Image 1 (cartoon, rainbow over the protein chains, first blue to last red):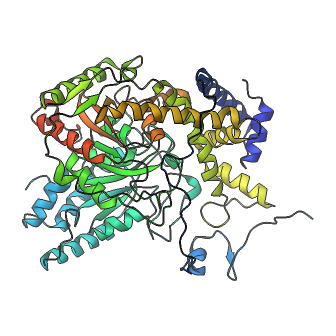
Image 2: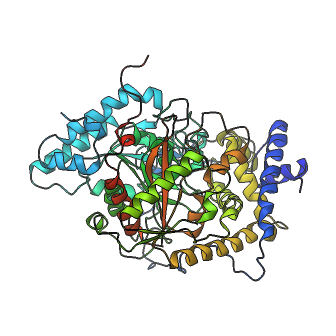
Image 3: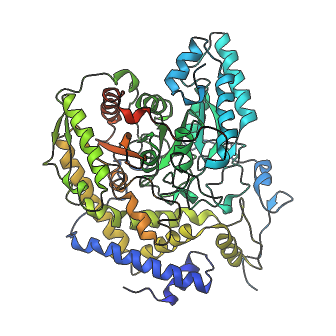
Length: 96
Length: 495
């Protein structure tokens, strides 16, 4: 199960990471090693077994649809990298 | 005067109540130790001396009016830096959150504040809680107070080291695959991972949402009981918190153990276990037997060996989703770029360390189309089987006994070349998170090199009371043990 460099690049793009060529090689090799290790799970017979996404027997919890205070514009201004006229400023989203 | 910074919560509470010392004196004693030792240990990312002394004085004023709030009023507590603290920097030991100041408190922080606790500061961790040594911190490692060339464990290494070295009376950490229990074992303190859902995760920066839990690191079991009582309980702000009654742990610590059964699953004592660790755990078993507890070696967790493979599929998958929010838009680091996608990539690449990047990539891969069934879903099915194994074992026992770690503390840099080598440190702890059960780690001896060894007790869901009771009585039965008289070799000025 060897991860190709191209695969690592594609995944990095999906995860919004820029990897250097050195990182592509190093992480690729390290991840190959981990993926090789987890192959051990194939020893188990898991046919028809329900997956456990969550250990507690809880289903959807809602709350009453009541208005509650959220972040104030001042809160956001204090933490935002670029805040002008009540808005967080970001680079261009759409091309063209 | 007693060495105030080395007192337990309950000893300090008794002293404060009896007017033998003030919270201000206690807090100053802790900060004096921080001034002397912190440069060598690096347990903290941010200390809060001024606000701590203010809180201490407020506590003393309350007490003078007869309005003391309980055993935590005026007690210096450290908080792992992945717990949101309003107005106080919270970095998760990551450059991507350098300078980030949360506008809100975690629920556990609110509860401790209401109990009158004095916050000493935010402790170091592996970045975003990913690691077993605190070497993955974006701001430098923490050193083990017992040997400064060694790791304190991780990811709650800063909290564990602070408690071990008297740089706080107690601390909160978080545990996803062993991050409270493993550093507790390596630094000789008590660490408790509660049952999943026992303690609200609101305000704990998420790593793996189906595994994370907040818990105490303390000098003894009574302190862990006191802290659990203060922080536990249903929280409507955490939809995964359990609506279960709790409390009364401290009051029940002394109830007799005769008739209790403890399972000692054989799979946990195989290859890879340091013989001195195995021997120390064997000795714990003998102490418990003398207390009237029956130990059953026929108990088995057949799929224990699959815990690590499962964990290193599930945890990175959940982490890749949780860490998608760090994009440079509203808070934290931003690397400006020509368009949004480039901004995300530049920001995340500059802000995240290597281990975090590795886990994000692994997690993204195992969730991706074509691989989801073969990896993530398979791991979740295997998790069901592992939970069944624990259920079966705990049907005939009150608790299980195991080593906490395969070895005592290793040297800084010793396991950083191969991520898989580092992951193997979690072999005894990850299964407990996967099953959602509570786990308590207690110091049980020192190795021939003078390094702490810990033992783990695993309980039924929501049965922290049994673990704390067994742990407390083990502690009492061994209170005169020679190894308990030794302290980390830290005293005196820097050479």
